[in-house]
Image (tube, rainbow, N blue to C red; front, side, top):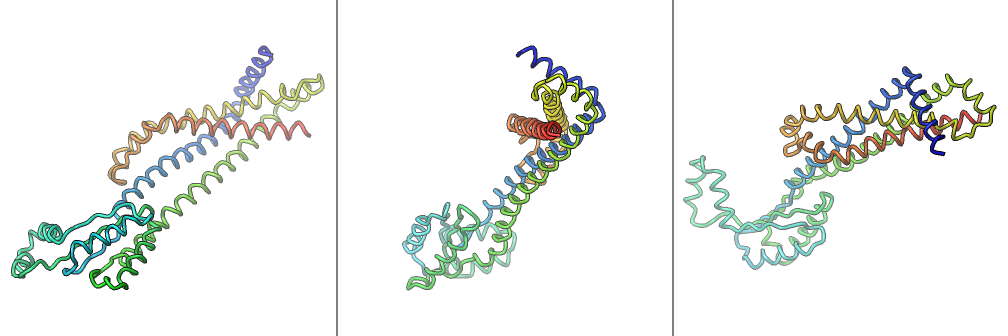
Length: 305
Protein backbone atom coordinates (compact mmCIF):
# COMPACT_ATOMS: atom_id res chain seq x y z
CA UNK A 1 0.00 0.00 0.00
CA UNK A 2 2.82 2.40 0.90
CA UNK A 3 4.62 1.55 -2.35
CA UNK A 4 1.46 2.20 -4.36
CA UNK A 5 0.91 5.52 -2.60
CA UNK A 6 4.47 6.58 -3.39
CA UNK A 7 3.91 5.68 -7.05
CA UNK A 8 0.70 7.72 -7.19
CA UNK A 9 2.48 10.69 -5.63
CA UNK A 10 5.40 10.33 -8.03
CA UNK A 11 3.10 10.08 -11.06
CA UNK A 12 1.25 13.13 -9.82
CA UNK A 13 4.50 15.12 -9.57
CA UNK A 14 5.63 13.88 -13.00
CA UNK A 15 2.30 14.87 -14.52
CA UNK A 16 2.50 18.23 -12.81
CA UNK A 17 5.94 18.87 -14.33
CA UNK A 18 5.10 17.37 -17.71
CA UNK A 19 2.03 19.59 -18.10
CA UNK A 20 4.11 22.62 -17.22
CA UNK A 21 2.13 25.22 -19.14
CA UNK A 22 -1.23 23.93 -17.91
CA UNK A 23 0.12 23.72 -14.36
CA UNK A 24 1.49 27.26 -14.60
CA UNK A 25 -1.90 28.54 -15.77
CA UNK A 26 -3.70 26.85 -12.88
CA UNK A 27 -1.15 28.16 -10.36
CA UNK A 28 -1.44 31.68 -11.76
CA UNK A 29 -5.24 31.72 -11.50
CA UNK A 30 -5.17 30.22 -8.02
CA UNK A 31 -2.45 32.66 -6.91
CA UNK A 32 -4.59 35.60 -7.97
CA UNK A 33 -7.60 34.18 -6.16
CA UNK A 34 -5.70 33.39 -2.97
CA UNK A 35 -4.06 36.81 -3.04
CA UNK A 36 -7.46 38.48 -3.24
CA UNK A 37 -8.77 36.30 -0.41
CA UNK A 38 -5.72 37.11 1.75
CA UNK A 39 -6.14 40.79 0.91
CA UNK A 40 -9.77 40.56 2.04
CA UNK A 41 -8.54 39.29 5.41
CA UNK A 42 -6.23 42.28 5.80
CA UNK A 43 -8.78 44.76 4.44
CA UNK A 44 -11.46 43.31 6.71
CA UNK A 45 -9.19 43.69 9.73
CA UNK A 46 -8.38 47.28 8.73
CA UNK A 47 -12.06 48.09 8.31
CA UNK A 48 -12.95 46.47 11.64
CA UNK A 49 -10.20 48.48 13.35
CA UNK A 50 -11.47 51.70 11.78
CA UNK A 51 -15.06 50.94 12.69
CA UNK A 52 -14.07 50.22 16.28
CA UNK A 53 -12.36 53.61 16.46
CA UNK A 54 -15.42 55.32 14.98
CA UNK A 55 -17.78 53.49 17.32
CA UNK A 56 -15.71 54.66 20.27
CA UNK A 57 -16.20 58.27 19.15
CA UNK A 58 -19.97 57.97 18.67
CA UNK A 59 -22.17 58.64 21.70
CA UNK A 60 -25.38 60.30 22.83
CA UNK A 61 -25.02 63.37 25.02
CA UNK A 62 -27.67 64.51 27.49
CA UNK A 63 -27.41 68.12 28.63
CA UNK A 64 -29.16 69.13 31.85
CA UNK A 65 -30.60 72.46 32.87
CA UNK A 66 -28.60 74.55 35.33
CA UNK A 67 -31.27 74.02 38.02
CA UNK A 68 -30.88 70.23 37.89
CA UNK A 69 -29.53 68.88 41.16
CA UNK A 70 -26.70 66.37 41.33
CA UNK A 71 -29.13 63.82 42.83
CA UNK A 72 -31.48 64.13 39.85
CA UNK A 73 -28.63 63.72 37.37
CA UNK A 74 -27.27 60.75 39.30
CA UNK A 75 -30.69 59.09 39.30
CA UNK A 76 -30.98 59.31 35.51
CA UNK A 77 -27.37 58.13 35.17
CA UNK A 78 -28.16 55.03 37.25
CA UNK A 79 -31.27 54.30 35.21
CA UNK A 80 -29.25 54.52 32.01
CA UNK A 81 -26.57 52.19 33.34
CA UNK A 82 -29.25 49.60 34.11
CA UNK A 83 -30.29 49.47 30.44
CA UNK A 84 -28.97 46.38 28.63
CA UNK A 85 -28.08 48.47 25.56
CA UNK A 86 -25.75 50.82 27.43
CA UNK A 87 -22.02 50.08 27.57
CA UNK A 88 -21.02 52.97 29.82
CA UNK A 89 -22.12 56.44 30.94
CA UNK A 90 -19.66 59.27 31.60
CA UNK A 91 -20.79 62.03 33.96
CA UNK A 92 -19.49 65.60 33.63
CA UNK A 93 -20.37 67.98 36.44
CA UNK A 94 -21.16 71.68 35.95
CA UNK A 95 -17.76 72.67 37.30
CA UNK A 96 -15.93 70.25 35.02
CA UNK A 97 -17.98 71.38 32.01
CA UNK A 98 -17.03 75.00 32.76
CA UNK A 99 -13.34 74.12 33.13
CA UNK A 100 -13.38 72.21 29.83
CA UNK A 101 -15.13 75.13 28.12
CA UNK A 102 -12.48 77.55 29.37
CA UNK A 103 -9.73 75.24 28.13
CA UNK A 104 -11.25 74.95 24.65
CA UNK A 105 -11.64 78.72 24.32
CA UNK A 106 -8.54 79.85 26.19
CA UNK A 107 -7.25 81.66 23.09
CA UNK A 108 -10.51 83.59 22.59
CA UNK A 109 -10.20 86.56 24.86
CA UNK A 110 -13.68 87.96 24.13
CA UNK A 111 -15.37 84.66 25.00
CA UNK A 112 -13.46 84.29 28.28
CA UNK A 113 -14.15 87.95 29.15
CA UNK A 114 -17.88 87.50 28.55
CA UNK A 115 -17.88 84.35 30.66
CA UNK A 116 -16.15 86.15 33.54
CA UNK A 117 -18.83 88.84 33.56
CA UNK A 118 -21.55 86.29 34.36
CA UNK A 119 -22.50 85.97 37.98
CA UNK A 120 -22.92 82.18 37.88
CA UNK A 121 -21.93 79.12 35.86
CA UNK A 122 -24.13 79.09 32.69
CA UNK A 123 -23.36 75.44 31.90
CA UNK A 124 -25.24 72.45 33.20
CA UNK A 125 -24.05 68.92 33.85
CA UNK A 126 -24.10 66.38 31.04
CA UNK A 127 -23.95 62.64 30.43
CA UNK A 128 -22.10 60.95 27.52
CA UNK A 129 -23.73 57.60 26.78
CA UNK A 130 -22.09 54.88 24.72
CA UNK A 131 -24.11 51.91 23.47
CA UNK A 132 -22.85 48.36 23.00
CA UNK A 133 -23.93 48.43 19.34
CA UNK A 134 -24.55 51.42 17.08
CA UNK A 135 -28.04 50.12 16.25
CA UNK A 136 -29.01 50.49 19.93
CA UNK A 137 -28.63 54.26 20.15
CA UNK A 138 -32.18 54.87 18.99
CA UNK A 139 -33.71 52.83 21.82
CA UNK A 140 -31.58 54.80 24.30
CA UNK A 141 -32.80 58.05 22.74
CA UNK A 142 -36.41 56.83 23.04
CA UNK A 143 -35.81 56.16 26.73
CA UNK A 144 -34.50 59.72 27.18
CA UNK A 145 -37.50 61.13 25.30
CA UNK A 146 -39.72 59.31 27.75
CA UNK A 147 -37.81 60.89 30.61
CA UNK A 148 -38.22 64.34 29.00
CA UNK A 149 -41.99 63.92 28.76
CA UNK A 150 -42.25 62.81 32.40
CA UNK A 151 -42.71 65.10 35.39
CA UNK A 152 -38.94 65.55 35.90
CA UNK A 153 -38.26 66.11 32.21
CA UNK A 154 -37.71 69.84 32.76
CA UNK A 155 -34.22 69.12 34.06
CA UNK A 156 -33.16 67.78 30.62
CA UNK A 157 -32.47 70.66 28.26
CA UNK A 158 -31.15 68.80 25.21
CA UNK A 159 -30.45 65.31 23.81
CA UNK A 160 -28.14 65.39 20.78
CA UNK A 161 -29.10 61.97 19.36
CA UNK A 162 -31.04 63.32 16.40
CA UNK A 163 -28.15 65.59 15.42
CA UNK A 164 -25.86 62.52 15.36
CA UNK A 165 -28.46 60.10 13.98
CA UNK A 166 -27.31 60.50 10.37
CA UNK A 167 -23.72 59.67 11.28
CA UNK A 168 -24.81 56.75 13.47
CA UNK A 169 -27.05 55.32 10.72
CA UNK A 170 -24.27 55.70 8.16
CA UNK A 171 -21.82 53.89 10.43
CA UNK A 172 -24.29 51.05 11.03
CA UNK A 173 -24.86 50.76 7.27
CA UNK A 174 -21.10 50.59 6.63
CA UNK A 175 -20.71 47.78 9.16
CA UNK A 176 -23.54 45.70 7.70
CA UNK A 177 -22.58 46.36 4.06
CA UNK A 178 -18.89 45.52 4.60
CA UNK A 179 -19.80 42.17 6.13
CA UNK A 180 -22.20 41.32 3.30
CA UNK A 181 -19.79 42.39 0.55
CA UNK A 182 -16.93 40.43 2.09
CA UNK A 183 -19.03 37.27 2.30
CA UNK A 184 -20.32 37.60 -1.27
CA UNK A 185 -16.81 38.29 -2.61
CA UNK A 186 -15.38 35.25 -0.83
CA UNK A 187 -18.13 32.97 -2.18
CA UNK A 188 -17.76 34.33 -5.71
CA UNK A 189 -13.98 33.92 -5.72
CA UNK A 190 -14.21 30.38 -4.36
CA UNK A 191 -16.72 29.40 -7.06
CA UNK A 192 -14.64 31.02 -9.81
CA UNK A 193 -11.48 29.26 -8.63
CA UNK A 194 -13.17 25.86 -8.55
CA UNK A 195 -14.53 26.40 -12.06
CA UNK A 196 -11.17 27.54 -13.50
CA UNK A 197 -9.16 24.83 -11.77
CA UNK A 198 -11.78 22.27 -12.82
CA UNK A 199 -11.33 23.18 -16.48
CA UNK A 200 -7.55 23.29 -16.11
CA UNK A 201 -7.39 19.79 -14.69
CA UNK A 202 -9.86 18.57 -17.30
CA UNK A 203 -7.39 19.79 -19.90
CA UNK A 204 -4.58 17.92 -18.14
CA UNK A 205 -6.72 14.80 -18.12
CA UNK A 206 -7.46 15.21 -21.81
CA UNK A 207 -3.74 15.35 -22.64
CA UNK A 208 -3.27 12.08 -20.70
CA UNK A 209 -6.38 10.37 -22.09
CA UNK A 210 -4.44 7.59 -23.84
CA UNK A 211 -2.53 6.72 -20.67
CA UNK A 212 -5.71 6.74 -18.61
CA UNK A 213 -7.43 4.56 -21.19
CA UNK A 214 -4.65 1.96 -20.92
CA UNK A 215 -4.93 1.99 -17.12
CA UNK A 216 -8.65 1.38 -17.34
CA UNK A 217 -8.12 -1.51 -19.80
CA UNK A 218 -5.65 -3.29 -17.51
CA UNK A 219 -8.04 -2.91 -14.56
CA UNK A 220 -6.34 -0.18 -12.55
CA UNK A 221 -8.35 0.98 -9.55
CA UNK A 222 -10.17 4.25 -9.88
CA UNK A 223 -8.23 5.84 -7.01
CA UNK A 224 -4.98 4.85 -8.70
CA UNK A 225 -6.07 6.72 -11.84
CA UNK A 226 -7.44 9.70 -9.96
CA UNK A 227 -4.59 9.96 -7.48
CA UNK A 228 -2.01 11.72 -9.68
CA UNK A 229 -4.53 14.41 -10.66
CA UNK A 230 -5.55 14.85 -7.02
CA UNK A 231 -1.86 15.32 -6.18
CA UNK A 232 -1.57 17.87 -8.99
CA UNK A 233 -4.56 19.80 -7.63
CA UNK A 234 -3.05 19.86 -4.15
CA UNK A 235 0.28 21.05 -5.59
CA UNK A 236 -1.52 23.91 -7.36
CA UNK A 237 -2.89 25.07 -4.01
CA UNK A 238 0.36 24.62 -2.07
CA UNK A 239 2.53 26.44 -4.61
CA UNK A 240 -0.03 29.23 -5.10
CA UNK A 241 -0.36 29.67 -1.32
CA UNK A 242 3.42 29.82 -0.89
CA UNK A 243 3.69 32.45 -3.62
CA UNK A 244 0.95 34.56 -2.04
CA UNK A 245 2.55 34.47 1.42
CA UNK A 246 5.99 35.22 -0.02
CA UNK A 247 4.66 38.21 -1.96
CA UNK A 248 2.53 39.57 0.87
CA UNK A 249 5.40 39.80 3.37
CA UNK A 250 7.38 42.56 1.58
CA UNK A 251 4.14 44.13 0.36
CA UNK A 252 2.76 44.44 3.91
CA UNK A 253 6.14 45.76 5.11
CA UNK A 254 5.96 48.44 2.41
CA UNK A 255 2.38 49.57 3.02
CA UNK A 256 2.53 49.16 6.82
CA UNK A 257 3.45 52.79 7.67
CA UNK A 258 0.99 54.15 5.10
CA UNK A 259 -1.83 52.00 6.45
CA UNK A 260 -1.16 53.27 9.97
CA UNK A 261 -1.38 56.88 8.79
CA UNK A 262 -4.56 56.18 6.82
CA UNK A 263 -6.44 53.92 9.26
CA UNK A 264 -5.16 55.40 12.50
CA UNK A 265 -3.95 52.63 14.80
CA UNK A 266 -4.04 49.78 12.25
CA UNK A 267 -0.69 48.68 10.79
CA UNK A 268 -0.95 46.13 7.97
CA UNK A 269 2.52 44.69 8.57
CA UNK A 270 1.95 44.29 12.31
CA UNK A 271 -1.34 42.54 11.60
CA UNK A 272 0.30 40.26 9.03
CA UNK A 273 3.12 39.20 11.35
CA UNK A 274 0.91 38.81 14.44
CA UNK A 275 -1.66 36.65 12.61
CA UNK A 276 0.74 34.89 10.22
CA UNK A 277 -0.14 31.43 11.50
CA UNK A 278 -3.84 32.11 10.96
CA UNK A 279 -3.24 33.55 7.49
CA UNK A 280 -0.96 30.61 6.65
CA UNK A 281 -3.66 28.10 7.56
CA UNK A 282 -6.34 30.11 5.77
CA UNK A 283 -4.38 30.60 2.53
CA UNK A 284 -2.88 27.10 2.39
CA UNK A 285 -6.07 25.43 3.54
CA UNK A 286 -8.14 27.29 0.97
CA UNK A 287 -5.66 26.55 -1.82
CA UNK A 288 -5.43 22.83 -1.02
CA UNK A 289 -9.20 22.55 -0.58
CA UNK A 290 -10.01 24.31 -3.85
CA UNK A 291 -7.40 22.31 -5.75
CA UNK A 292 -8.58 19.01 -4.27
CA UNK A 293 -12.26 19.69 -4.91
CA UNK A 294 -11.63 20.83 -8.49
CA UNK A 295 -9.43 17.85 -9.36
CA UNK A 296 -11.82 15.41 -7.71
CA UNK A 297 -14.81 16.72 -9.64
CA UNK A 298 -12.89 16.81 -12.92
CA UNK A 299 -11.51 13.26 -12.64
CA UNK A 300 -14.79 11.84 -11.41
CA UNK A 301 -16.61 13.28 -14.38
CA UNK A 302 -13.95 12.01 -16.80
CA UNK A 303 -14.10 8.46 -15.45
CA UNK A 304 -17.86 8.43 -15.76
CA UNK A 305 -17.50 9.15 -19.45
